[in-house]
Amino acid sequence: MDQAFLPENPYLLLTPGPLTTTPGVKAAMLRDWCTWDADYNRIVEKIRNTLVRLAAKGPGYTAVLMQGSGTFSVEACLTTAIPKNGKLLVLANGAYGRRISLIARRQNIDYTLLDSGDLEPPDPEQLEKRLEMDPKISHVAVVHCETTTGMLNPVDTISEIVHRFNKVFIVDAMSSFGGVPMDMAGLNIDFLISSANKCIQGVPGFGFVIARQSLLEQTEGNARSLSLDLYDQWHTMEAGRGKWRFTSPTHVVRAFAQALEELDQEGGVDERFQRYSFNNRYLITHMREMGFIPLLEDEFQSPIITAFLSPDHPEYEFMEFYTRLKDKGFVIYPGKVTQTDTFRIGNIGDIHPPDMERLVKAVKSSVYWK
Ligand SMILES: *Cc1c(COP(=O)(O)O)cnc(C)c1O
Picture 1 (spheres, rainbow, N blue to C red):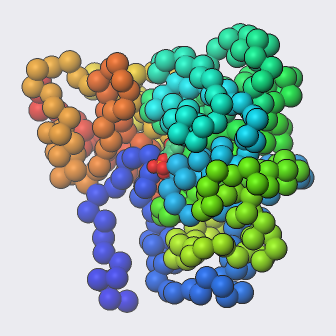
Picture 2 (picture 1 turned 180 degrees about the horizontal axis):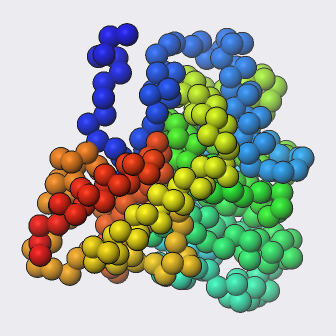
């Protein structure tokens, strides 16, 4: 094959997505598909079935794919799942949790926000209190891995309370699904949202929602938007066996099917979780040795992405540090925490222990400020 079609990546993406993909995933995009043809629709159906199998160890779930970035799927899910007379409680501890409440506000969904600040998980006692005090609340939403800080929120504790109060439970598992084992059925999660370009290791272009089918079936007519109507999208996919309502990102979908295949070859979500966890522990151990301080306590840290405090040195500048690392083959991520100056290093994607070893050496030789 002409090298021009598959150029070498000049650097690895140590970001929360889009992330570094395998040559196999990239190569899967080198052919055209007809969005209405049965060959293509079969790929879509296989993807939907695989997603349901990965998400839930029990029956009664269904998957809907939705064009756009992950946020489009969050918006589609909220604005379809919550009826006009419903009320949403948002548990937030970072930018992605707060984005859920921004969507609610913009779409005139009645909501209330319980914000625990960037460094603390949601408080179970306060959650109980809110649910007791406000019986209008019908839905509760939380982010699983809050990518802002890298915090892994305790969905098990939260789910137990939400279930006890009999509320619909929505989880933004965008940056954890496929990389952290989780069972929707066991956790009583009703809607779980993720996207193509995170831990499944596909390329960006669509998101997806895995839903309790009996609940999704009751949402006809709720959507505040035509293109983001999750019910209509689901109905068309079900009735048309893999048909999308509007033009679908065919190449991206084909690449995602390949990414799912490769997840299986790796040994599934458990094995991927082990690789990410190794990458993450290796990174944190060696960054600590070099004097960097992680933002979070170890007990809250996810194996997905780590926020480090920016070095407290007058000569440190993120862009200079970033550029030096990029020249050595690694792209890191700026911070997003409001009160604290941080930078972030992701360790998801086609990233393996030898890459982490090279990264640590690259960081060592990029520290120019002491
Ligand atoms: C990546 C991400 C999103 C979606 O972001 P997009 O830029 O719209 O793809 C939503 N929530 C979380 C937790 C994320 O990590």
